[in-house]
Length: 329
Ligand code: TXA
Ligand code: MG
Image (cartoon, rainbow, N blue to C red; front, top):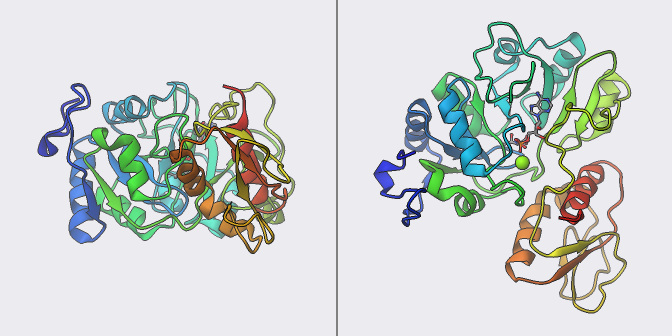
């Protein structure tokens, strides 16, 4: 993998590499698209989190993603596309899935459905499964990059496997910089949580991962979402310990105990404590979650006590991320 040429860095030798955060103007997007076409990796902003993007049709490029992330091979990637028409070239989306795409794309929703025969995405990207995850991201920079590349982009969150997801260009650069041709800076992510993933395998759609689009919005269109079959490979990315800061986490903490740093939510948190949303707004809390976990973790605290988060709206996804971060490891 000597593809970091123009920066003089090399992930094998551990030699220092210049930070390459590029403005996401036309020139930056053109550079990124050229790198993608050469099979290199680019960190791109999306409205949910930053993704590390590669040409999804190039298996070697996809392999570089797994290598850079240190990600287990069985964990399949999302193919990012500009719109529903492009998704239909890759996946056999049933009518309910298409209705969701029409309502919520571009946006923080990923659809999993059978791979279409003739689908050009490398099977490594789908981890050999006969299903594929597709998403049309809303961020204008992601859209510009997709248009410039003219092919689907495989893009997991741009963090080392098991680390907190990146919501700023600097996070992606810090975790994966040595592996990237460049990072396109599109500012902080507006949603701040990964996309909601809905699977279409049989009769009822399945909520594979709560995320940036609330369950209620989806159920209003397609009816109740089922839970994934336990122990199935329907959601192989749902490892118990995943979004993990270094510090231990204690959830639903009314107040910090001795030795804990408090992460508050809502009005009336302890003076000086970081607060996910002082006004108790779950959308604001989602957008700030990974940022604050990273910021507190950087202080090398031993333990973080997190205030109770209501399990409504985006609170479901926030609680899911926190439970994973708190899982024994
Ligand atoms: O918001 C997002 O979705 C971000 C941005 C960059 O788009 N991407 C993201 O990708 O979160 P990643 O790789 O971190 O998470 C993708 C999830 C994983 O849990 C994976 O297992 C699941 O999607 N997935 C992908 N393909 C699948 C499939 N065929 N069947 C079931 N789950 C699948
Ligand atoms: Mg991830």
